[in-house]
Image (cartoon, rainbow, N blue to C red; front, side, top):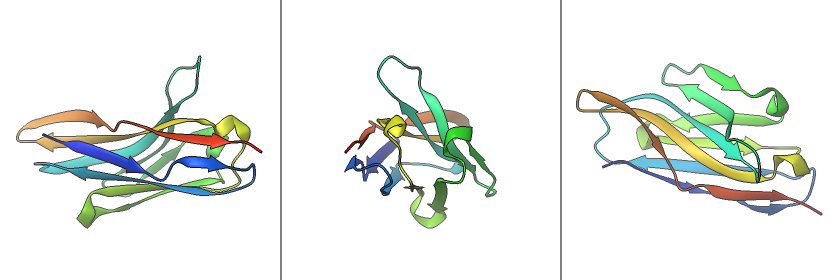
Length: 119
């Protein structure tokens, strides 16, 4: 069984910064990618940033230049550094991992962490 545990959400003023962490545990044989998605009330979940095992990254246009994704392969942990936060960044941020367990690749999700940007 695979678990993804997120941390680091909270309340921050506009222009502030937060760092999210997501640690994976379980019988993971290989990692294809890990990343972050977000969902705000009344909206569909959207991609924020992802990183493949080879290091390639993908960012949503609204966060380019402000957010940075990184990882610790040994700990199977991914981070999201969020700078210059805006009220429209308010959402539940969820961690995603695409892992191989045995011979099967599957997507796994964390429980989500709330990020609120407000003065």
